Length: 94
Image 1 (spheres, one colour):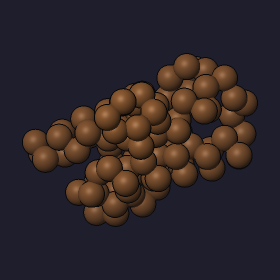
Image 2 (tube, rainbow, N blue to C red):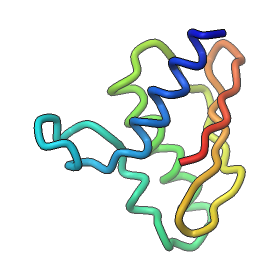
Image 3 (cartoon, rainbow, N blue to C red):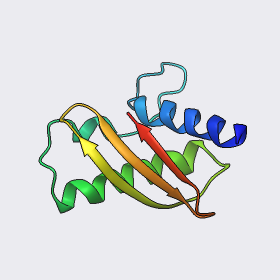
Image 4 (cartoon, helix red, strand yellow):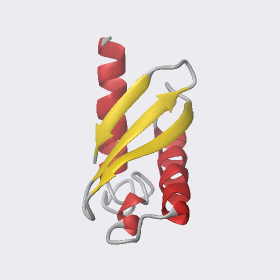
């Protein structure tokens, strides 16, 4: 279980860091910030999944994502569910 807690914290850090925010590692992070104040529709959901999978695959090699689900979006923060290929589900608020 501590393994999943570590993975969850790592993923949360990756997703909450905008690309370019780390001077010494400008490629670290995700593009989720690009979705702030966007209309939630099919394109939004597709981009959300893509941005999550893209960032996690690059920076968190311990897991493979099967699916990303939007739970809630209030215009400034996301609540998402990440389903891993082993069936584990991580609920993350970014």
